[in-house]
Image (cartoon, rainbow, N blue to C red; front, side, top):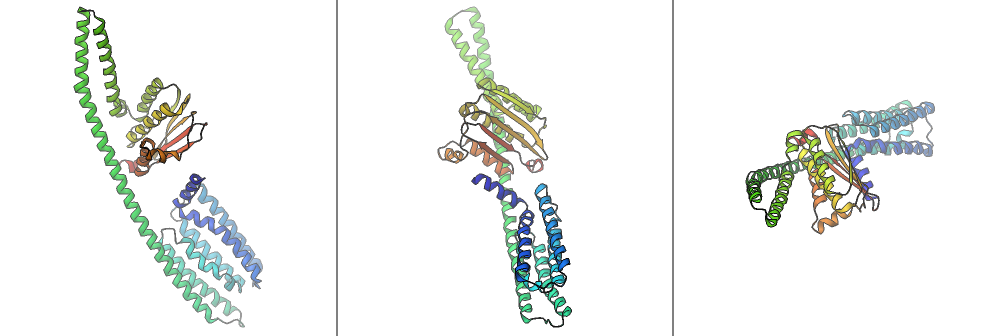
Amino acid sequence: MVRHFRRIVDYFAAEPVRVSALLRLPLIALMGFLVWLWEVDSWLPGVYTAILGAYAVVAVLWAVAVFRGPVPSWGGWISTGVDMLAVVSLCVVSGGATAALLPVFFLLPLSVAFGDRPVLTGVLGISTAACYLGAWIVYSKRDDHVGLPDVVYLQFGFLLWLAVATTALCLVLTRRASRVRVLLDVRRRLVAESMQADERTNRDLAEHLHDGPLQTLLAARMELDEVRERIPDPALDMVYAALNETAAGLRSTVTALHPQVLAQLGLAPGVRELLRQSETRGDFIIEADLEDVGRPASQALLYRAARELLANVNKHAGATEVTVRLYRAGDRIVLTVADDGAGFEPSIVEQRVAEGHIGLASLQARFDSMGGAMAIESTIGQGTLVTVTSPPEQAAST
C-alpha cells in the first residue's frame, strides 16, 4: 500500500501541472455550489451557466490531456490564463457573484505556487488582484445603486499581499529544488566515477590474472601432460584434473571481472552469454527476449544488474522458469527479470542490508544515484519481477 502511494506521489510531483489540473475540478464544483447557496441575482444567468459549463468541460479535457501524456512547457501558462479568464467572466456577467467568488481569487495563486515558476505565480497573483478590483468597478458602474465598498480596496490589498507571499514561496521552493538537482547531479557524477574506477580496477585485475597466473597454470598443465604421457600415474592424473578445475575457475573469474563479449559486441550479446552461463549453473529454464541495443553508456551497470539478479534467482528463488527481457524505451534501456520462484516481501531488502546482505540494495542505490530506477514486485509463493531502467543515455554518458 505504501509503495503504491509513493508511486502516485512521484507521478504527480513529476509534473506540478497535473496537481493543478486535478485541484481545478473540485474548485469548479465548489464555485457552482457557492453561488447557488449565496442566491446571487445574476445579471445574465444564461451566460453565467454557459461559461461555468464550458469551463468545467475544458477543465476535464485538460485533465485528461495532462494525465495521458507529457505536458508541454506552455501548458501552465495556458491553463492559468483560462482560469483567470473564466473567473473574471463569471464575475462580470453575474454582478453580485463578485463578492461570492472572492475565495476563488485567493485560491488561484495558491494553485500554482508549487509549480517552480515564480514568474507565472507573480503574474497570476497581480492579475488576480487587478481583475478582482476591475470586476467590482464594472459591477458598480453598471448598477447605479451599487457603490464600490471600501472593503474592496482592503481585499485588493490582501490579494496583492498574497501575490507577493506566493511568489516568495515559489522562489524559495524553486531555489531549494535547484539545490537538490545540483546535489543529485554531483551524486550521479560521483557514482559514475566510482563505477568507472571499479571497471578499470576489474579490467586491470582481469588482465593481470589472464596474463600472469592463468598462463603460468596453463604452462604447468602442458608440462604435466607431457610427464603423464611418459609416466602413467593416478596421482598425476589427480593433479592434472585439479589444474584443469583451477584453470576453469580462473577463466570464470576473469570473465566475471571483465567480460570480453560485453566490451567487444555490446550489451545484448553480453547478457545472452551471461544467460547461457546461468542456465548451465542453475536448475531452471531461461526464456530471453533481447533487443539489440548496441553499446549504451550504462551497459556495465545493466550487465551488473543482470548478473546480480540471476545470481539471486539461482541462490534463493527455487524457480523453474526465468524470463529475461532487454529493450530500448525512448532514451532509456529497460531490463526485466521475472521468475516463478518462491518470491519474497520487498520490504525485506532493507532488513537484509542491516544483516550485511547488500546486493539488491546496493544495486538499487546505484540506479537511483545515476538517475535510473529499479522496481521490485514480488509476492511470497508467486515469484518475482524486477524491472531495471537505465539513466537517460545522454545523462549516462556525461
